[in-house]
Length: 299
Image 1 (cartoon, helix red, strand yellow):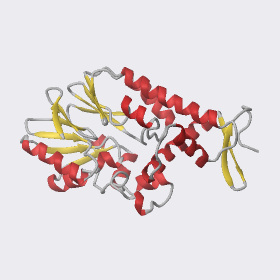
Image 2: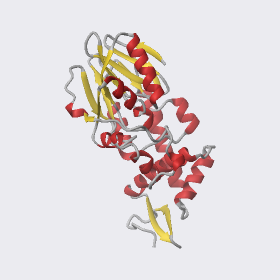
Image 3: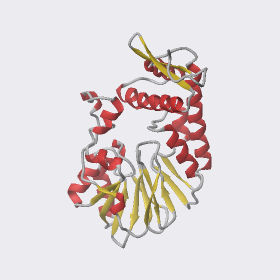
């Protein structure tokens, strides 16, 4: 972990999941997200302590385990408040919900790993945070009610709203809960006028226009890939296998639920857009292109 100062009162810890820091006075800070596990939390505490600062609070942008994993150890050791928004608050307080949502049922033990299942912590709603210099913005799409943070230095922390060119070229399909909202968030990001943008898995940058285009183009590509495959009736498992094979992805337990959930979200987007229809044949759910706009289901 490396501490970087990006403006007067705004810093971030460069990490696999970047950690935002905002100084509200000479020795008190808020951190933005807390890493993937208790070891991340301990390392954050060490960096903060060595600077002579105290953690006044944690702001979680969303409830994915790699953003809330350090919450518990930091809260236990400092007594700080933790803030998040709406559904993200509920999941952070009840982290079993993340693997349950992704799997679509009670998660078997192999899904209860640190990448999907964080320790629980006590959380307040972000709307109760009354602190000068901190403003939250709504960034839904990647997860239910993800937020970003703008500091008084005009620095934006944008969570998982954008992924790097390297990640997209390697994996192609990145996790999205709501495709329509994700695309709308990309449109919103284009309206921002910040001095610097800090994303969770991308180096800080002063311009995000190219990243927005890369992310939007890839989402639209995946939409077309799935749609084009559905010239014949296919099950979800058929579609998932096709996408993995097309992009030379390797299946494992975590990828099955993360990418599987994402593919289902793309199917929902295509169905709600009237582009595909579904039905049940031999007790299997199947999907197909909607060749007649008046159709709603496969007959």
